[in-house]
Image 1 (cartoon, helix red, strand yellow):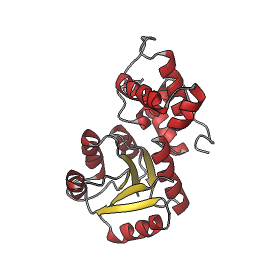
Image 2 (cartoon, one colour):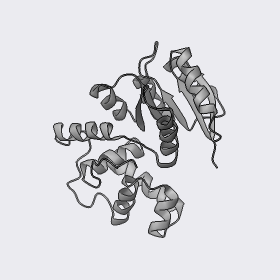
Image 3 (cartoon, one colour):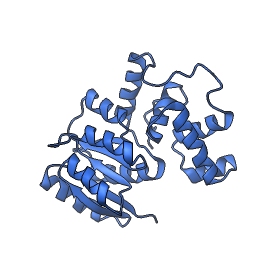
Image 4 (cartoon, one colour):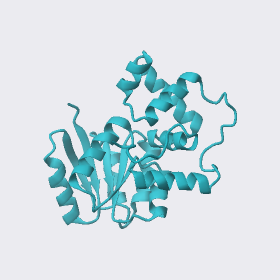
Length: 226
């Protein structure tokens, strides 16, 4: 069992204490730091020798908010997965966080079980979007006429193998599962994933899923996350 290092970024001490109590009960979770704002979080990442795998990020924080912090972190630590955990459920907030590279978006009134499940899914697969978030992504793609993601009218943009890997990513397969299904090594899968990120100009695996939605590689269904 892999231990998941977690950082909580939220300006409310009571909430941080509550979510930490929840996470500390999970044997594979290790909360390594709590930040009151984005600047404190950035400072921690610039000095620590133990980096988080996942950050639970509030949106509204003093000095530097969650969107600004997420954007900054992805420039220097793109491998860290960020889950928005906030009370704001507006489309603009969700869209902004996804745009800057959030791997998931949760509301603070979600169930403890859902929080634990989301952290595990994001760690294993790189993303986790529920039905509401997927619909917002889909609506934004339609309303923007595809301008949010690089056009790939050139059918040679992706190789056949890259398309195979992308489809399995969109089907929420892990690296080892993709390797097994395609009879290739996990390292080869990682190479294809990196190429996909570069070619589609995606910030992370979640961005590849958005690309997959636009290209109709996956459908928005009620059981997408089950």
